[in-house]
Amino acid sequence: MTSKTFTVPNISCGHCTHTIEMEVGELAGVTSVKAVEDTKQVTIAWEDPATWEKIAATLQEINYPPEGLIQIS
Image (cartoon, rainbow, N blue to C red; front, side):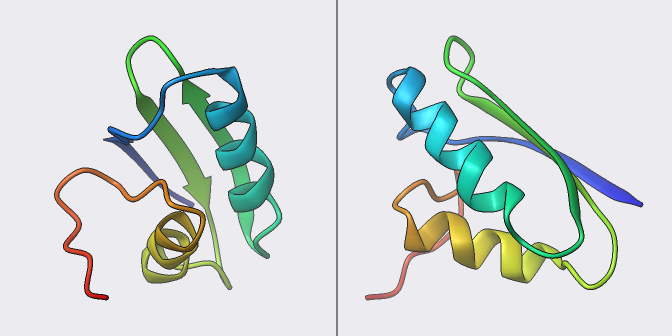
């Protein structure tokens, strides 16, 4: 199992954290998602078939990209 903790600057309320947890949690292979409003930190744990690329793409799609991730429109 792999896990990663990162900052999502777009988090501003409880709805934001709920959206991240629900959307990313639906990906096959994601075992846990915890988003914290106060720190804007997200911790995700996953195993195959999930990959960081799929998780990051999902976060970009729902407008909560990880900090430092380059967005190409």
